[in-house]
Amino acid sequence: MDPEKTSGVKLTGIVPAQPGGEQVQGDHRRLPMLLSQVEWRVQQKLFPGAERCFAEFSFALERHLAEEDRVESTASGRPQIGRVAGPDSETLRQLLLRVGDAIRSRDCEGFASSASDLRDAFAAHADAEAKEPLPS
Image (cartoon, rainbow, N blue to C red; front, side, top):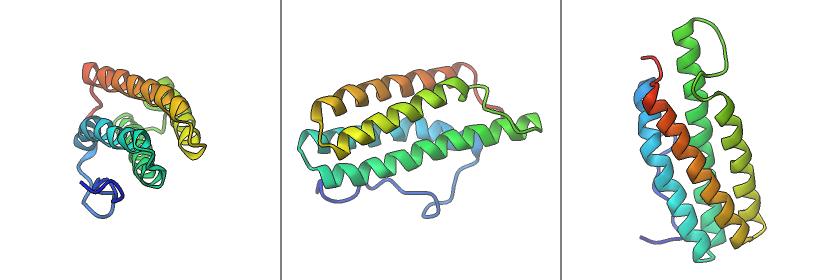
């Protein structure tokens, strides 16, 4: 794989979106792989590639959180903050900002710590959803 190329993850609009719950479950597999690609690029000090790949990861994570909220709101019939995504979605967004700041400042140590925290928080988020799936 050429590390200067984009990650190959397809963004919304290029590939038809899957129905709500399927999209969310697919993200639980895709997002950690995409974060691994960001980590590899930072380790290699390929920061322009890391920034592009991180932009894809950020887009996909925000889409994931928005889809959870949409599915939850549709199922309940009223707008609300997602039952599963609620408090940890804010944590994920804060960690996302820390990771992005570390990449932009070329802070490899800060990136490694923040990316590890983000990976752990997303794994806990995915585990919580696996235990209490979103409505269909």
